[in-house]
Image (cartoon, each protein chain N blue to C red):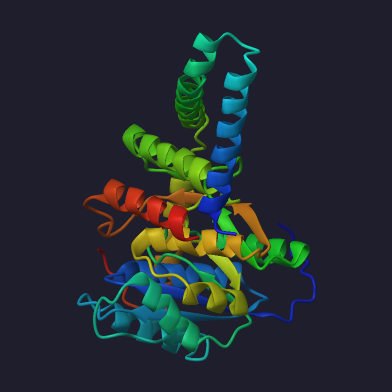
Length: 243
Length: 89
């Protein structure tokens, strides 16, 4: 990754939904600024009324980096991931939108790769994939890897999605494309991520992939729990029948 | 066209081929009747094989955890000096 960058007149809006990410959001913002030195971007934090003071930290970050670079667009309570993106989109002034997780499992050092890939291919969507060479996962035990691989094979067989990582949520979208796709998605949680990319494939959008590494949550508690597998299977059937 | 219709069309085509085989009696009928079973079992085996192969080749990145740890230290250092509260979790 060299220092020379092509003339890039695009603006990137990075939407980060947060809930109780007091420590992670500060670290994430620092890393984003570190890895995008010559890029025109803004960070939009959509916080769902975190009780741990996440919003206070964001305000402190605003005084360091500027209120024009970090936008806090909070909501009163947990209202779901899909609506968080829609809410963030309303305030996005860029022509491209990045969505990523706040827990540092998505590392900002890949952001230049996303941007470069999009400029090289003219893609409408660039999605990060953990399952190809150059990508990877750390912090998953055998059971987790097994369910992930099984889920992936099942989804590939049924849906022919055109991407190798369906449930990933580290993506770069052309803003108009995100607006178009998100309008027709109704699922919740990570099935929502699947629905987004499958609908985009069905609509014929140009989707490119970059390898990313995924280090499972370092600080805080994971918000995934419960009957994941049942939700996933229900989501697959829904996507099979409606896309 | 909806994806499910593509899959159904594929199944219809395969079924038509199978019925054609039955009618044409090119292969002994006892085998032909078992073909759908062989097909489903093969599909299942293929699926299990793909899961196994994928599991063996699952890309991991243990060094990334270390790099992330270093990034976190660097970030905490910088932010503390700028007055952002990065106290321990």
